[in-house]
Length: 131
Image (cartoon, rainbow, N blue to C red):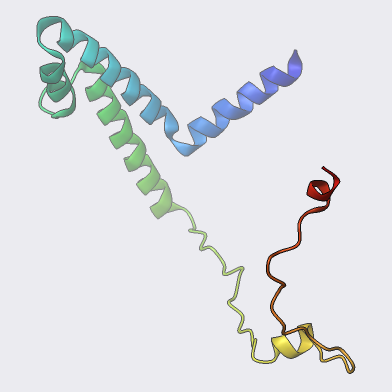
């Protein structure tokens, strides 16, 4: 019982830390707007009213305000505190494959390769010869 709760809390924390809660709220707002607008008009008109940006609902305006406030707070935090720059962890390496074939397939003295073509007609399979 405790493990699913812990996993759920971890997922919620991750969603909130990545800012995905705004996307979830916006999706809920769009679905509600589409349902509301489709009562009075056709589906295509409701779709265009929902996504044209000219007819925002209360939830959409509060989402826009919340995102703007969050962005402003992030900018203020970035200016006031020390900024961490990511370090280069990986460096590209140059590989030389010019002599790789000689190392993979060394020449073995006495090894003769076949160059004759397979016999025609091809031999029958073992299961066919038993019938």
